[in-house]
Image (tube, rainbow, N blue to C red):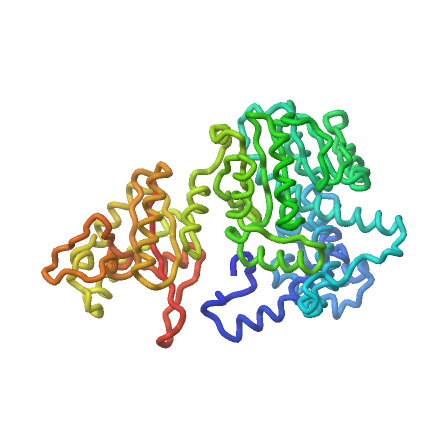
Length: 517
């Protein structure tokens, strides 16, 4: 599964082992929780330590600790050199306290959500969340819990904004920014650090802003930030059409479909004519597994939070007369949508055309759309033998020898550096038509050299001619394997999975290739 490297199997392909890996998922998380809680990585940041040294520092028994450290090594969080243990690069950057990218608070917050997940069946029976904070909770307790949550979200936001700011790289971004439901203010801070001509207004509940102010003052932003106490679900006490950039980061999923339209309308009203609205959130189109589980978490642990599709969000934005970009995936588990009063406002952004194209093509119905280097397309000399000896379609239109030879395919790839690898499923005719749509979308996006290789013999027409003359050469394309490409090796190099089928009726995958440039 994407994003879960310890699950070795695609759920469509695997059997009991995949189920076992799912069932044991809490082993992985609990090992991480415990290591962060014990501050193992912070202690090791000063240098390698032996089991006895760590046992003394952590006040733990050496025998159990050694086995725990071995597990952390297996998870890639530590490495061992002889009898000494060291942080890996990942742990050193993200799991050492007081470092700028520290994620420990966010990780431990996930642990606090576990009690709610234990009541999942009861929530399903009730049709709603069943555990709420006690009404008898003291104000100090509420404040501590709120601060823990804001600190956890600050960990995440600090890394997310590093992925988002580059969309504006090199632009003379100036004027006023409105960060709505900011929590820690990390989103606003990321923009203020990069663009000195910006000022920011942070809008949130008053008790949240008290802690936000503390965090932002430590970062030295002082008078560049205005703090605006308000309930997001009520009218916002900010200037109408007064902002060049409005940010809704992880806001959409926090509310219901009955509440979000009003939030989007208020955001639209705050935008200047030349302004931009940035929506950052989880979307099922980008990371379906994480989005689905996050949606379930909102069901269990919030009042009415929910994950929405990018289609729904964009429709709602259109309803408040805003133009939108396609969903733009980030390298991590979230994605962004930009909106504006004028479509030409997007022209100033540094949007990656390939990322936008990937999202557009995935919406055509493909399971995966991976951007790959053409250097990873493997073209051996034996692939054509599989067609010549073993396929009844050999000699038919667009099949060998009436398709590009391995040598010709190698020559063609010399004029390309990148391609999209598309994963789909039967039936063949539907898949091949989707591939043609993908090629057309690539051409329309400006990739004038776009050319597709699909899977299997041509199935575009209901029936094929008997005289060997193609009636539809405009829509016909060669298959990857028919053009000499080793599909299995190419898929493996792309980080996707493909295997031979041990028995008839097993799940079938199709792969296609769209050369871009």
